[in-house]
Every structure is written in C-alpha cells, then in structure tokens.
Amino acid sequence: MKTTILLISLFFIMFTTLYCQNRDWEQITCFDRPVTEIKFSAIQNIYHFGLLFALPGDGGGLAYYVTPESLATFSPASNLGATSIVSNDLDNVIYCGIGDGSYSDGLYEFDPISQEFNLISWEPYPNFVENLTSGYYFGCGNLEIPGCLLHSIDGEDWAEIDYFSEMIVTDVAENADGAIFITAGNSIYLEHNGNYTFIETPSLITDIYVRNYPNDNEVFIASGGGNENDGIFQVEYSNNEITGLIQICEIFQVNQIYEYNNYLVAGCSDFNSNLYLVEPEENGNMIMIGSEIEINAAYCFDFYPIYTENFMVGTDLGIFLATNLSNTDQTVSNNEINDLKNHPNPFDLSSNTTNDKTGVSNLYTVFSFTLPNTNPSDARIVIYNLKGQKVKTLPITLDRQNKEDHKYSLNWYGKNEKGKFVTTGIYFYNLLVDEISIDVNKCIVIK
Image (cartoon, rainbow, N blue to C red):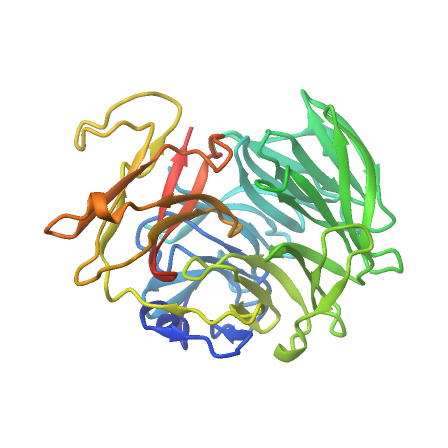
C-alpha cells in the first residue's frame, strides 16, 4: 500500500532561512495521526536527512519522504500500522515492527527499491526494533499476550533470546562501554556474558534512556504503566550488576525519555501532563512545556540536525519541533556553502586500510567545504550523535587553511572529546561560521 501526502511546512524549514522569534514550537509535518517513532537512515533516495516515521493504526505504516516535497506511507496491508522502525544502512533495508493485535503482527523487512515487505517473524504486539552496536533487537508482547526478545548480529539471522520468552519486552539500550539493558514487564535487566541481574519497579517500564558522553553512561527508565507509582528512575549499576534505583520524579503514564539542555524530557500519554523538562537528579524539579501545543500524548523524541539544542516530538497530532525553549534566537541558512561532504563515508575504524579511489585512510574521514565571499572570525565543525549530543568540536584554522579558491578541509579520527572512539552509527556534522549554522550533513561510522 502506498499513500502520498503533501508536505506542508518541513520543506520550508529545511531549505530556507528561518528566524525563531520567541516561538517554542513548530508543527513540521501534516500527519493527522499519532507518530510513535522517529528514526534516521542513510539509505539513498530517502530525503530530509533520511528521516523515517512509524505510524500506528489503520492506514498507518512506515513513512518517509520519497521526494523533497512529498511523504509516502507503506504497509503490508491497509489495516496494519507500524509501531517501530530502524534502518539497516549497509544492506539498504528497513526493519519494521508492524501491527497492534492482529494475526499479521510481527517483524518485517522493507525494501525501499521494490517497496515490498517480507515477514521475518510473526510476533504479537511489537513494541520496538532497535539497532545497537551489538546488533539488532526486536521486542514484543503486552498484558494480554506475553511476547519475546529477538536478536540478530547483522539482520540476516534472527534468534530468540530464551531468557525473555513469554515476557513483555518493552525496550533495549546499550551504553558506550557495551553494557546492554533490557526492560521486560516491571523489571530492568543488565546482561553480562549471558547472565542477567535485574531490579523491579512498581509499574510497567516503557523506555530506557542512556546519557553517554559527557554524562558517564547514566541510565534512566520511564515507569509508566498507569498507576500511582509511575515516574522516572535512575538505574544504579556497577561491576556488571544493577545495584539500585533512584527516583527522579513522579509522572503519571510517562512513556518516553529524551534530553534537552541538561534536562531530561519526559513524554506522557496523559492529556493533562504530556511533556515535561525534568532535572536529572533525585526529586528533580519539573517544568511543564507541552501545554501550548494541545496534544493528548507524546510518544517519541529525536534530534533535528539543522539546529542545536532542539528536539522533535512525535505526538497524537503529528510531529512538533522545539527550537527555542531556552529563548535563544537562531538563524539558519545554507546559501553560502558549497559541497559540504566527507570522505570516506562510511569510514571504518576497525582496520587501517586505504581507500583505492580517494587515497584516504579509513581510520579517519576528511570534511571538506567551500566558503565563498566570506571573511569569518570563527568557524568550526560540531559533530553530534543521533540524540543531539555533542560528540566532538573541530576548530577550523581559517588563517592557515584559507586558499584562493576558499576551500577548506580537516580530519576527524572517530574520537569524542575524551579521546575515546565513538560507536558504530550515524553522526551529523554541522558547519558553524560566526555562531551561525551554515549547513549539516551526515556520516556513517562502522567498526
């Protein structure tokens, strides 16, 4: 099934100069239904930074921009929506959790070239499909029908992890040190060499969020099953074991966590309290931020790479972009940039090889760009991960690199500010000149 929907405003946000004047929220899609997940891909011919959307319910499915001006929705059948999606960029396919209680529920593979779905495994009530450094994961189940956890190293062969058989598996996350956290029912588990330690919360756990660099792999969970014990907790762990929980705050029906400007962002399925900024500490202060957009529920978050310090939120009314919650005006323009790119892309940190075409080592990538008709006093490239967290800042020494043709280049060796190698995944790099974001592009790191 394919349905084409015209884009209302995202095209203008991405390709024109936008000046934020005391505006906290901008609706950036014309979805007339909930959006339960937002993900990025590096697959060709998926526009707007490769954004993918999961749309649940009848008429829903996997959605993405097939041209810069139009959005298409794909599903195996008209009554099957999508709850979760993730791309396999190396194989140019997308894995989808499809359905919400039908006999066709399961994990599907979608081919963007043929625009066809292939059923990988029938599983009831899919909750998530995720790509981590340790592989791909799929979890499912609800209170009516317990589910399972599937894992695949490369997306080819999927196998059930027996430990989680007949459980309600709601999320999985991995920190920068390779520790894997899994939520099932009211418990969060930490895996080490096939063994698990766990701790229970008083309510169904709906989300895991890991704050990596520079926050020392802090792990938070949303416990939002719908009772008086709902809230956000920080998971304490050491020596590959979970040791305790710290209650950060009480929030009814909290289902997703993200972060913004050193706060946690909490999304809820309760109309009266749908979005909060929360201090990430015990009994942290809370600020309600969603009253202006009149949504009933917030389902997912992600970073929008044109801006710094922002987030997108998928709601029951489509997607909203928060760009000015700290009252900072920003100007975005790409009229002065030519050929912002990096080579090699992807670049492989696992072996010291040389690309035959470019002569460049795969152990680093070279950012190159042109700045015509400018005389900037400051310029830098800032690299972000998919959570919008700054990974590395690369200053550009304009006095030394400036040439008559105004071309510049600099290297990134795949390390963060602490000198540690980043994990496999998609990263965005933003060229800033005199504090103005000029252009954004993306690169893929593999190991």
